[in-house]
Length: 141
Image (cartoon, rainbow, N blue to C red; front, top):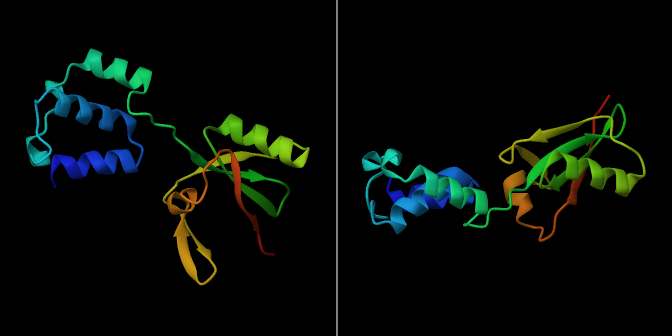
């Protein structure tokens, strides 16, 4: 695997710290995009500069997660939101009640939809604004 592949994966998977470190090392000319990742040494980075880049969100990450909010013993609502608190507030505004609980799921969790299977990560690409209701689930008896 090359540095450019790792960098693309870091951006795609929203691994902000890794993406900023790679960006810094590339921008400073310490590494090349075509270098193998085995030659990568993050200790070569100026950690203070990278920390400032992460703090200012130089690469523009806007992490969105998926949250399962429990309506009652059998019903759940899945909401894409920037954080747990935003998901709870959106749920409360949408349903005029507080959820019984709220748990974050992995974006890589796959679920059946129609005749196929989709991950929450792929489903998230269908939306432009957040928070948003992704779907509902009713537990069987």
